[in-house]
Amino acid sequence: MGTYVITGGASGIGLAIAEQLTSEGHHCLSVDIQQADIVADLSSPEGRTDAIAAIKDKTGEKLAGLVTSAGVGSHVGNNALITEVNYFGTVDLVAGLHDTLAANKAAVLLVSSNSAPMPTNPDFITALLDSERERACELAAGMEGHPVYSGTKQAVTRWMRRHTAAYAAEGIRVNAIGPGYTRTPLSLAVEDDPKLGDSIKQFIASIPVGRPGLPQDMADAASFLLGERASFICGAMLYVDGGHDAMMRPDAL
Image (tube, one colour):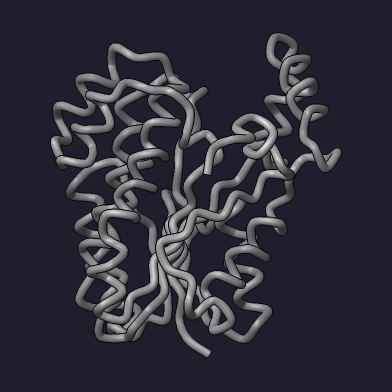
């Protein structure tokens, strides 16, 4: 049993993962903008630095795993915020905790999305992967919200793949899950929206398994990838989306 830190752990998928790990006997610390064990704003470099320091302090640098579930949806109308939280709020925390993760041979789970493979601005992806934060936010300002969202998730997944070998050599396993449509309080509000509701309901109806995802579906996948049964799985992106990715990209691996 060990200590896990979950960003975005106060609600939705992050909360479900924290509850699942707690039920298995682990100790979990949530990092979120409010109502969390560590209250932190991951939308700024200073907030991320403060979060890293607080994590090290509260865990005594004893860390079994890190889950980066904090994220902002494409509907918020602030593309810089999506960029800062979804990408830099993930990779900066993993990088900032690298020494602690290596010392504990910890597991890392990144919460990506099945939107990650969708087309987006390649210059935006390059800026993210090159850690050009200001350039990435500048490019995001001229884009629609969803390509920014999917772009951040694609970049997070590619960052994982680029760092998998070096991290694995130090005993750090990094994997990702790609949730599909997941029914949370936030998504329920969108389902009931008079403008968007019909489109969302049609989208849900197209999920091959015949139902939307639940936070527990993501928590079950997370528990497996973080645990010993997945000790030989490293650098993998597991789609947890009811078959949507396979339906939309049948010939892509």
